[in-house]
Length: 291
Ligand SMILES: [Zn+2]
Image (cartoon, rainbow, N blue to C red; front, side):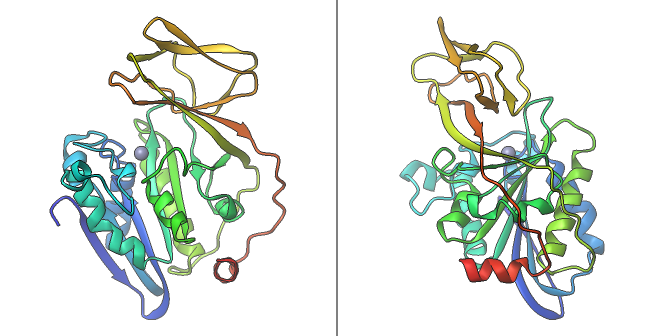
């Protein structure tokens, strides 16, 4: 296990097995910094936590990935090339821990300079996502981001959250990551303390992903994540061809893509569903009953 570092911490009482990941994308190092600051003095009362530094080579080089996007490698069956790549092997090393975990949190950050913290999870965990300080909770990513850690947990009907801490260059992103980790650990019952709940969350359903099929894609400007179009407008150009989105479309992760088949941008819509349940410390028990 050369490209993954795993630190295990245990409480005295029985409890949940938790996996928290940082550095899945090596240039999003807020989670790595949060780990370095949290782990040495953490007082765990129950259960077991695996802290996973997920892509050491990419973290060292401050790059998103070396050969494959690690967050597309958590698949039941990897291609031959992926299987033999740095990230493919890293995913194989991490998967047994995800198989053992009851709940998972994966810490990320966005390329978009104006990005704000948001949550990615399965539709059925939207209410639980109130433990995260985020104005947006998004769901329905699995079809578009197959092989992500939350996708892998969803496959098994287990709870997985991806928490995006805002812009990866924000000097406070590590503090945002730390707060999310503490909230998650309190919610899971592995550390003591009260849980804050964040009720003002917009629910966004991911509807589509645009990949360039013929030529490089260039965005027309910087779009903040979750920017909603007030009219039909150009998002960027694939070669000479202008690409439009419609009024009401919500744009996420719009980025230039040099190579063909890149993930140029995602489009979401604001979800209609009402979320009324109050979160309690019993939520994990509720989760178990529902899965
Ligand atoms: Zn990421």
